[in-house]
Amino acid sequence: MNGIRLPIELTAASVVTIAAILILPHVLELFALINATVYVSMAVLALSLALVWGFGGILCFGQATFFGLGGYAYAVAAINFGDTVYAVPVAIAVPALVAAALGYVMFYGRISDVYIGAITLTLTLILFNFVNSTSGDQWRIGAAPLGGFNGIPSTPPLNMPGDPGNPLPPEWIFAVAMLSLLICYIIAKLILRARFGRVIVAIRENERRAELLGYDVRAYKLGIFVIGGAMAGLSGLLFANCVFVSPTMFSLFYSGQIIVWVMVGGLSTLVGPVIGAILLNLLTTWAGTLPEINPSLILGAILALAVLVMPRGILPSLATVLGRFRGARGMT
Amino acid sequence: MALDIVFAVGFQVLSGVATLLITSLGLAIIFGMMRVINLAHGEFLMLGAYAAILSARAGLNIWIAMLVVAPLAVGGIGLIIERLIIRQLYGRMVDTMLATWGLSLALIGAVTMIFGNTVAGFSAPLGSFAIGSFTASAYALFLIVAAVILLGGVWAILRFTPAGLIARGTMQNAEMASALGVSPDRVYAVTFAAGSAVSGLAGALIAPFSGVVPTMGAAFIAKSFITVITGGAAMLAGTFSASGLLGTVATLGTFATTPVFGEVMMLAVAIVLLRLLPQGITGRFFRRAL
Image 1 (cartoon, rainbow over the protein chains, first blue to last red):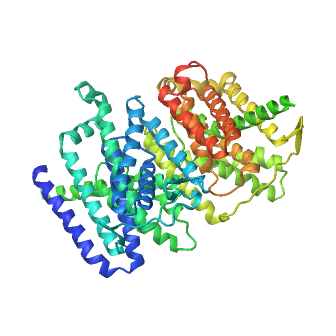
Image 2 (tube, chains in turn cyan, orange; image 1 turned 180 degrees about the vertical axis):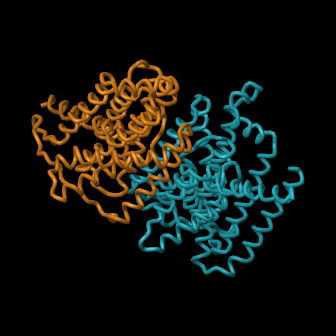
Image 3 (tube, helix red, strand yellow; image 1 turned 90 degrees about the horizontal axis):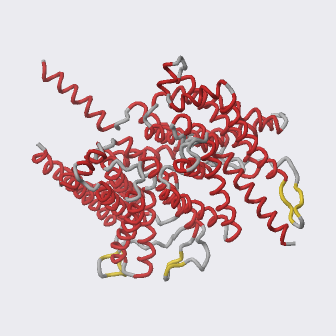
């Protein structure tokens, strides 16, 4: 069944992506288009945590670490290299390496659930505090000042490959973001279909049993954690291309938000967190325009309600309801 | 001359440890008794601070506002939250964390809407005293004393009172306690309210030097969370040893470099410690302590 469904799902995702790239830049105004690009970068971030937490069962409270690192690595490399295309692999490699180091310490140290949450959260806070304090001229990497609390407002956007003087217009950045999302989705789908992904899910379901069956649980967890870190880094890069990098990328609010997206969208789905990220971002942006209501209140209430009422997330709950409906109809 | 530096630094270390201990104890009580991590803990501190400042503004004596009103108010709020949210999620640790995280965001939003995003504050109600050629805040001394009394008080309640016995019994084996006629639900409700009350008190106690803003909890939740997790299963011994260690590192680090790096050092030490002792300090040492 999966064999038939996979091509259909991938084709559908590609069609949606191409349609969005062709249509949205003509429909949306520039500001809205840049906002849309931010949402897409958030969707990539949600996808990364969906892999790590939803399928890997690793409760990472600090996915924002890799998001922020990706953004900063991109900004610093782009300013130093001049040609920003070369900064792309850096923005993916740096968070992946940090995830590898952190994951090695955690998984090979046999640290589990809450303690992983505590450690990843702590790392985010360390970086938040550290980057916030890097104002002043002594804090620079090559030609790039880290800028402390203000971040790096002069984060250069991506340029045409091989043509540093020619930055991509916002429509192209949007297209790059959409394509990145599509690629990450396809990669995630393929991983989950492969043996590696099946073992990952088996470990989530029952770690002891997977281990007794002869799988090296530590290596598998490390693997999915690094992949998630690299994806989060890519999303940081995309974010840096629409806004600019600043210490808030490491903040508790971001780390929390990512978890809300995945939780509300649906654990152990891929499309759910993507939709969750986009819908909740639209919601918070809309709530931000209401003078009397604070966006945190809405976001928080949604998370609490989601946990209480639909602990498996909107998409799986919806699927259950639909399935019941269909089942009832089938019987008559 | 050198001696008063030692005393002044020692005093700072003690007050750093005391602050960490006070702000972590409420979280530790709830985690130790119920295996529930209350990520809205920072907002409970914030509510305690607001309760104190509002009742002080309404003309109440500042000490009564801080030491009586704040814990009672937040304890009451904790009781309601236990009913509405925590109770639905017993045994689902991760879900509890997520729900309380949502609660934390919602409380920040709600308080911002009501009181605005401005810093309110009241000055420390005590003056200062001298250590050799240094002056130290008398309020910091008060905090150290308060931390000792709070820790001793909770320990004495758990160790010597019938309620403490029931609480310890439920903590060790809820099913057995239930079979002996104790209602674990009630024990949990009381525990959560008590932990919330301690958090509320802590919020009021730190308000004079932290300032009162809706987002003030964020500065404490992570440190408290780390302290409690690093402490491990035995709530009092764990919190005491972890806040002693981490508070010392943070304060000495602050002296050697900047406050930011002091905090970074503390968090780094916590990570290394968790790597070495994955079950926290009391997973290895003081296992039989409370």
